[in-house]
Length: 103
Picture 1 (cartoon, rainbow, N blue to C red):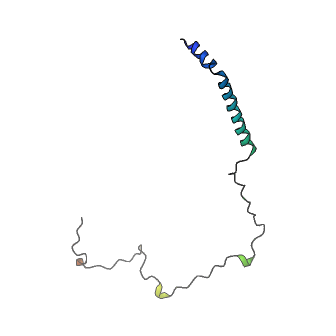
Picture 2: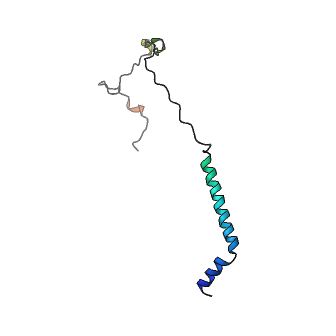
Picture 3: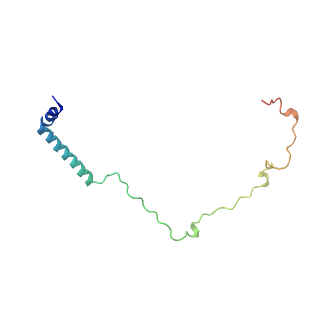
């Protein structure tokens, strides 16, 4: 058997069933396509609502009120000088480190 004879048998054998299956496949495809075009998907989101922009400034009653700064008592003020000050730190005795090594 050659390829031409096999191809002819493939097409002509059960040709009625093959044509019916092609027609049914086309009809199902057409029905699904028509159904999809008819209804919009249910998962679409509506456009976001626009926030109105105020056209006039807010009245003075609605502006935020900032309290005045609190006065700190002198007992709570820091007594240490900043690290970059020109004063020298107090000398510590040599025994204060107590056996520390360089490594």
